[in-house]
Length: 273
Image (cartoon, rainbow, N blue to C red; front, side, top):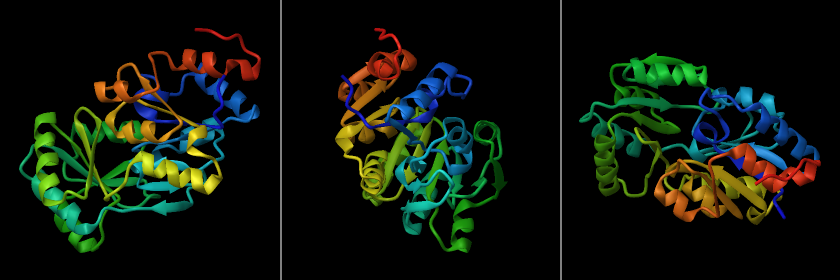
């Protein structure tokens, strides 16, 4: 029998289908579960502008975990906590990324509706389309940051996995305190020290008065790993990397079916396997 009070979902690859939408079956059930006393929120690498439509669709009432844990934000966009990447670490990461063919992006402020990129090509265009944002293209991201004299929330890079792995390894030597996570196979995110979805989940739970043991967290990639470790129950999608599957309490290839099996009885629906 489920004992959770809060369900926390990663978006891409987890809550969203291949069309980047919440399946009707899942969305309807989550709304019914809220009426039964189980709340829902999101934990994603995306910025606020890219999740607002899901906040409205699910009528979310609790704070959101954004930028892979760098920010905890109310559904109306009010920032509760923010941990930006220190400027020296960001500049060091960009110096390493210069040696790759990766397309790089900076996210500067939680409420921004655009990011800053050094390559307005197919990589950036795919993010623009998915997130419904705009982009500012600059020749030199390091010079941009130096002019701003402030670190970004995160550095986000899209490129060959082998190149990005080398950047992560080298950054681990020059700035071992930085957080480096892959949100997808070809996407590396560089964040402030100690920033994870897991640490942000603890911050969220403290603010809303829910014990982390009363949380079920769902994810599909390595940036979700700490969140699954932190929650009372961690559920990995079957497509997740081995490290995720090994750590998860449960694994599913059918989110709607899993939710129905675990929580359907709370809303008078037939329990299914």
